[in-house]
Image 1: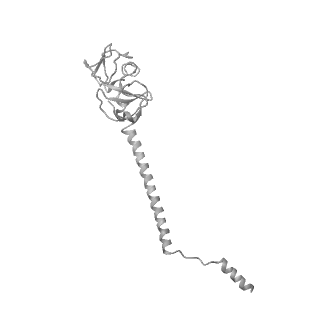
Image 2: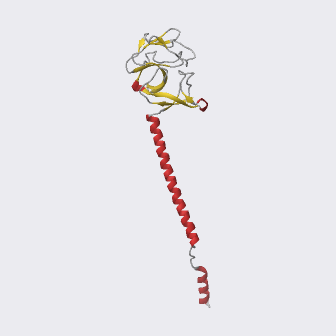
Image 3: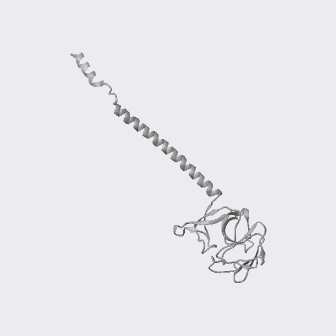
Length: 204
């Protein structure tokens, strides 16, 4: 009797293993395939995002730097806090707005004249380039401003003469503290305002 009881107890504690059905195996295989595809898609997506981000940083650094305006020397054309996009180039025309390095900072001013040009400014602030009055529709008011150069002034070779649009406060090529800007100082020409969104558009 004791042996029979032990055998019965053994039967209760050692159930035979159940083999999974074909349907269960197929379902598990499907889940593994899904997990494998998901990991592959995520890995490819991350690689793509890293590549795009690296390319964007490279482009922004080398070809189209993005800058934030500070100060009020370019008002009303540009205001402090606005974000602009620049494009690198080798030639600049009067009226173009450029960003350039000066004393470990980046300044933004408008091109007035190029190498070899003669610049003159009268007491009322009217600008003449090669004895021709410069057409400046972007100005709200004219001013001689902080000018300590001897006028008329000839722009040196490989440099450009720049001025801010807020003529009464801007420190620019009219003052020897800044002077004319060498081409190798120039970051690029401003082409687009991207912030704030309600002012999105080209910079002129």
